[in-house]
Image (cartoon, helix red, strand yellow):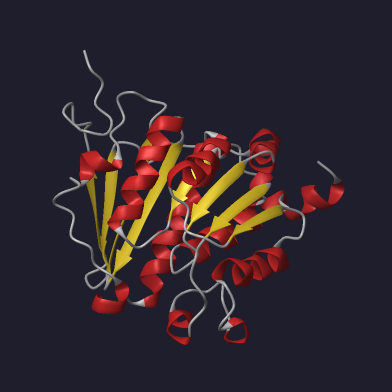
Length: 249
């Protein structure tokens, strides 16, 4: 770590649970962020600022005027640009010392599994159940920790699914594939700070997983009601009959 990095990350290095070793772990890490919208924007910005050495960002959409109310990695000037290219400009402006790989396509199948396999942590910032289940499946195959978040209306949720621990539940333990009802911000609306709150917490959980600081949300789901500003913490045990992560006896 050079002098510029020591100064840039000094406020994190001061924390006993991070220190030099934790910061080096961040610098050495590769994180895959899927979706660069309302959640992916704060995730990317905070992980870039924190010094995660290699961010791989994936999205297949373009910046639209309606995105700017909550997708803070994008600006009026980047309307019409691909979200990954727009986000890359913002992340590089915050931290030019890190590597950013932009993937302007929907990751699926072998391509998704390849990117998940290369990552140290996967952050799910997408907005549909089909992709969430596909990400969960890939993380189970590759044995990679998954930081999952969702936000809609005034509500949000976040959890960590770490398949390196055989006792940890997966996303399918929380939602059955046939019972998941797709809801989108375009149909239901969303208040901007909710995506910022959940996305910031996803960034925090990612940093904790990478550095080993504190205790992650593994085995728990945090639910936020923004209208009453109340948090609920729900224990999530592993489903022994889960079709995705169950282990045959």
